[in-house]
Image 1 (cartoon, rainbow, N blue to C red):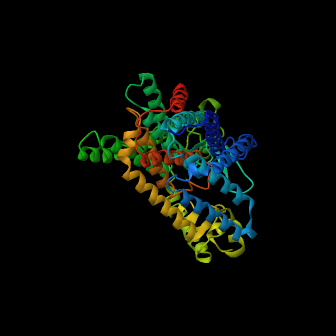
Image 2: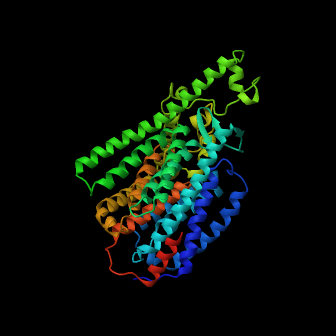
Image 3: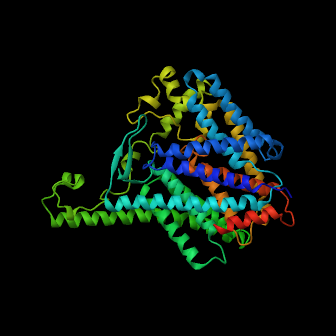
Length: 488
């Protein structure tokens, strides 16, 4: 069994927590674009650079990671695309590339004969940290809703951002409700993975409360991506949990039933809230008949004691009346136009706006009436635009390889999981929903979100377990790492 220096274990744990912290700070409207991000970003980058050099020095131990060379070629493709298009910019591309390298070669890559307790204990600590940070942001979001706090703010380039409840959606403490909803989906799946037999009742109650809290945010965010992902994620989780324990047809029916239940649970929360708000509005108008519709919405000429926060209804039906995709079809059409001009290597991921302004001045990305779009709102179109056909093919090949490795090694993954643990199911469902989410928003790569970090961590654990035979016995180091993780 391979031995490992405990100092490296601690440094890698700090790096993972640092990357998650940066991701949470980026996801929150309270800290987005603020100097506090740099306080955590630069130490994380320095530590990650040091650990990357350590892995380069011991490259023979990590090169056996499944899909290593495909990931290497993908990152190389990014460098080539950025270099060929350096006239459009380089710093942003370098910054994005460094973070992508961290995700793939520090969070995903593993040592083949490393004891499973080494990563298992780290993953447990990272999971607790993710759940705590996510709960804090979600609780803050509902606090803003309850006190009626709203704020609009602007950044140097990009859309207008909101805090609180706005335009029929709960932004809360997230600058993008879709990001907040997806973050909550991952929290729900991690919470399900931690609900195990033998755990104390208070622990299960706490996780149950967290699940309900995150589900409420998904409903109030009115995020269709979050709505879809939580339905798919919980349904797949139930299927994989019941498959070896019940008859297959029972597992299939339970999966479909759970998908329906989760879908209508979100719908039910939204409709219940809207009915309550409508009834409150009717009651207030009966008490104060002189209040006009305009004063109702603007909160003018109303006694402070009669002002109720969160009076807008959940829903954005008017946004979808003319375009069910909410601008995505036009964005994807623009992506194809860019790809047609540079199909092999792309234009460099961070060069979209500069390239379009110089070469496609009539593109919808910059001529629409909403904002300038630098993201394709689809990870596959993002790669097609940024790295061309070369990057797209490499990425798809890597995805197929990982999927085959995990599916074929599923029984192996189950056998290596700790007794009563269902975390491996949560990890698989996290991968599934983030791929689904990647079809309508930029996730997995190119971003420093907490979800992308959890994606590559989960992928690394599953692929490693699927690739290795079960070995008898544990090393002294493995026992010590397990004890460290169990204390937290």
